[in-house]
Image (cartoon, rainbow, N blue to C red; front, side):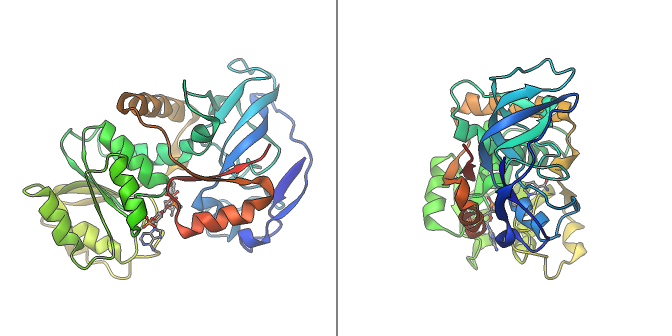
Length: 328
Ligand SMILES: NC(=O)c1ccc[n+]([C@@H]2O[C@H](COP(=O)([O-])OP(=O)(O)OC[C@H]3O[C@@H](n4cnc5c(N)ncnc54)[C@H](OP(=O)(O)O)[C@@H]3O)[C@@H](O)[C@H]2O)c1
């Protein structure tokens, strides 16, 4: 099969389109003919050895996708050859070969049929980021109470859009941050109540004025960096920050005293923590909620298979939603 091969840990610029052995379905697995794959920043981190997983080389990246089942291993009962399915986050593209290939072997327990009315493109990029956003929103003891204020940094990205949509489905007031005027407009169309530019010197004042007399109850932060201290400064009493990523790098300086008096809490998110059963249950709830608010996952752009490096460049530049690759 044709696949984008990672021969070294020198970054996605070094990926090579070549030939790899066709995967075979082990017991409990299915082999998919991949139609669409989706990119995640973690692919680029893994390719630079900046990720906990260090798979054997050559490796094939790609954690999300849609494909047609072409064979099933022993014991598979939930799908059969010919079914078109989406992939929920699993070991594909992490320790095992992923979806940037014509075929991929994945656990049958980690595939799901497409929700009614969804396009293959909408399905292909949604699972990893929606599962991450879901964990970020519910990890503090279940659904946040309706009417609470949610702040989403990096709101135009994969995790950001998912957090905005799921936050609206929970009846939260959503404040989104984006550096781009165009993407800010799209975020308002998607239902964000307020959108601000994170680089504005008046950021904290503007957020608090918009929410007054409330303050921020919950943050989904995928940016980190220098913005983090300003995010903390918008929190109200018992405010929580779910730390998903750090697109802007490490926080240059952090004073733990900023957490004391408002009893604020910070907690990490790891999409890798889901069991197959847990991700199926969360995914069903995510789909139900999107249906309830009449929204779908947002696709930024679809690149041809031979343009995977351009697709990674688009991801690095800051997309609006998900960057996809059409494999076949
Ligand atoms: N912990 C987990 O389990 C988990 C799961 C998924 C993702 N992640 C991590 O979460 C982060 C976001 O993932 P994603 O898929 O949403 O990425 P993405 O689609 O690339 O979006 C990131 C967004 O963040 C904003 N951004 C980027 N650099 C920024 C900077 N220097 N300052 C301010 N804003 C910046 C951009 O929005 P604007 O251009 O609109 O400002 C961009 O669209 C990544 O670090 C990823 O590895 C972690």
